[in-house]
Amino acid sequence: MSRIGKLPITVPANVEITLSADEIKVKGPKGELSQALNSLVKITKEEGTIIVERIDDTKAARSMHGLYRTLISNMVEGVTNGYEKRLEIQGVGYRAALQGKKLVLSLGFSHPVEYTAENGVEVAIDQEKKNIMIISGISKQGVGQTAAEIRSFKKPEPYKGKGIRYVGEKIIRKAGKTASK
Image (cartoon, rainbow, N blue to C red; front, side):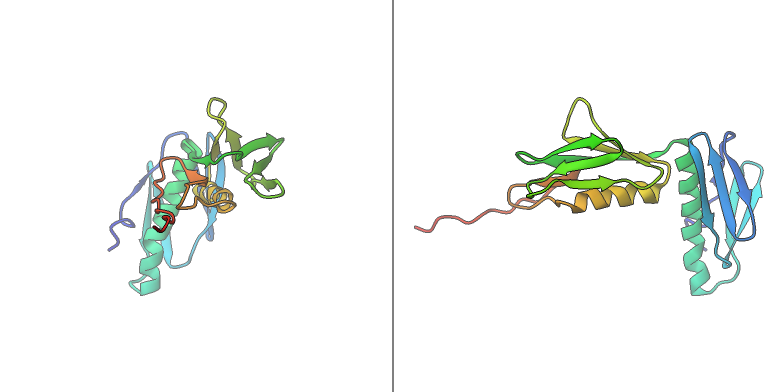
């Protein structure tokens, strides 16, 4: 049995869960999320908990067991607390600005890079430290995907460390060329 899949999901009192034949909806104080269900897993709702079980013992069913338990757990966590990722811009002349809901990045290219986040994901810039962007939302997948797309515009390079990185991310620096004697 899956170590992750067999764990019950505790549902807080302020979260409402609706189960149908092919979809689960989780509604909480921060918003509402839904997920299509696979026919290889069976979801039962009990007093304050949700239990995910697999239909049979095939490889496909075993792989879906832990996946759907984690997806539902992330949905419950997202509608109660939300998710947040922080990105840091490092480099001379590199900066970020918000124009309405559009993020405008100056990353050393000949043109500014513009990015609009998907629905449900908000991008903000830290007021104290202007080089830190805060990506937040209720969907863990949406927040992670948005952060990865913004980081992909200018990944940190190993020689000077310039680029967009996650806050706390360690960049392994390489030694540059040395002058020959």
